[in-house]
Amino acid sequence: MNRDAPPVRVAFNGVMGARYSELLQASLALPHALRCVGADSDAWADALATAEVVISMDWPATSPPAPKLRLLHLPGAGTDSVDVAALPAGCAACNVFEHEVPIAEYCVRAMLEHAIGVTATDRRFRSGDWSDSLVAGGPTHGELQGRVLGILGYGRIGRALAKRADAFGMEVRAVTAHPVLEPPLAETVTPDRLAEAAAQYDYLVVACPLTPVTHGMVDARVLATMKPEAVLINVGRGLVVDEQALFRSLERGDIGGAVIDVWYRYPGPPGPRDVRPSQYNFESLPNVWMTPHTSAWSTPMLERRFAIIADNIVRMREGRPLLNRFA
Image (tube, rainbow, N blue to C red):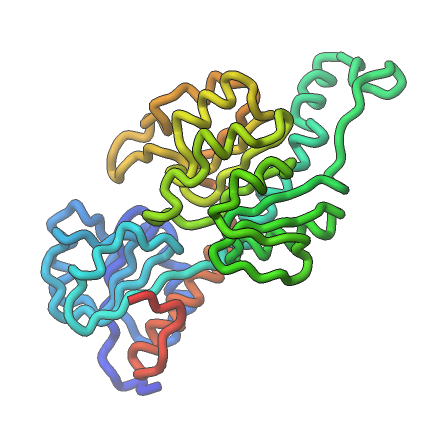
């Protein structure tokens, strides 16, 4: 590494820049000049005029000129907000993953909550209610062992989840465009057989990206085939699941429940934080567990991501192949 080279100029877009720039700086082992600014400010255009590296989850066609830009690095996995055609000539684009561990753990926790119901039991017992106790002849709860887990999308998240579900004694199956029967999978099918396969699942985890092919893939037909006690868990993208069909299915009690971490509406920075996540009142349904896109949001995940971003900045400077390049 040439220590005499001029500092690499990095522009970090959005709220993450202000909060997590220290993680990048802790990992970036070369001289650098970092600016953290919002894309809606005049300072963003000024930063792009000299930036060699931009860290941002989006790159719209309306982006200001960035004549020196060599690397657009997403601090996350989703590439659907990047207009690749709008990137300057010679600019590479990379993303990062590392979210598979916390998301897989989130899914396991969601399945355990559904099977055992610790939260509801805790709430009743705190009020002095012993009715759930075995000494009171209370209702039994379920187990994960022997349950059938279907995973839609068998990439990093799917494999991490399959490993953990297998440790609980679950039967793991996958729906993927590229079927491969590998341990611990008991079955793989292609997406055209999703409705048929979903009829066998106790849990269906949506872990695929949003593409023109996957948009609305989990529709009313798929939901109608699911067991009445089955639970859908969406940690992929909201629009993979038909919004209206899911709400109506849950409202009628056609399926046992849903755990939803990815949504149909999001606040746009620096917009209001009271944006409703859907046009439907999912919050009114007792068989729904809701979280605001938090399943991946762990400190170790962020540390791993920024270490990779720092490594790629060094690789760019040294002319070495970039990790996770998508454009």
